[in-house]
Image (cartoon, rainbow, N blue to C red):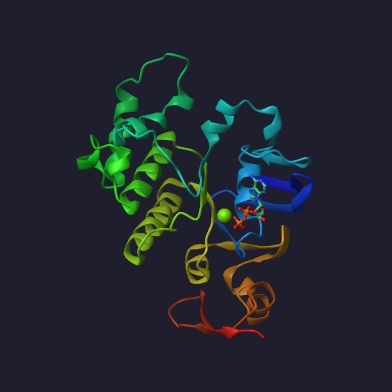
Length: 259
Ligand SMILES: Nc1ncnc2c1ncn2[C@@H]1O[C@H](COP(=O)(O)OP(=O)(O)O)[C@@H](O)[C@H]1O
Ligand SMILES: [Mg+2]
């Protein structure tokens, strides 16, 4: 569905992402984890076309994204970055309506079908009652849901999320990740996301890619990736890994920093 082949990104002569390759299969949830500053956001921005890469290729359903127009890309892929900012007075409904634009011609008005999709996206994210509120007046969790609603209205095949749970309390983190899981299972949306929390990555991902200093350190299922050795070498932390019988996913208990 989506293949990243050997891409490298440089900021002011400094290589931040080096020869990075991985692929995302249709219908899977793939999470990217790694320490702060390891290049996770850069990687997501590069593959979604926000940041140029000087080497390598990114293929979306068999087509090099460099040969695709931004509108064509937006019809298939939607990226929500770490800090999304809507213009101050924009209402929730207007924001969600933006999701329809990649599917319209210039100046083409939204029709009944678009309106139905927008209403559905609002209701799916429990925002129907908030639709006339300015996005800037929403709490962190509500605002994150509004951006996800916009992504839903865009109906992409692949959703890219950069730390969708940062700034949220644990119950809103849970809510957002459950919503992502629902989009994946009910709408067959492929999800590629950066997650900070190792246990969330373990719980919600089919596969995980580990980034360390701009390079791929490891990839595999949560079980393959979440090992004491990986956490020691990538995060310099000692931990215990536990398997609860009803779950097949590892749970990580961080113990102490490795000296
Ligand atoms: N626009 C930029 N210009 C210069 N350096 C940047 C820019 N964006 C990120 N960096 C640097 O690239 C490295 C990786 O950053 P980032 O991708 O944001 O890491 P992560 O998301 O893993 O925390 C960091 O050292 C950061 O300071
Ligand atoms: Mg980041």
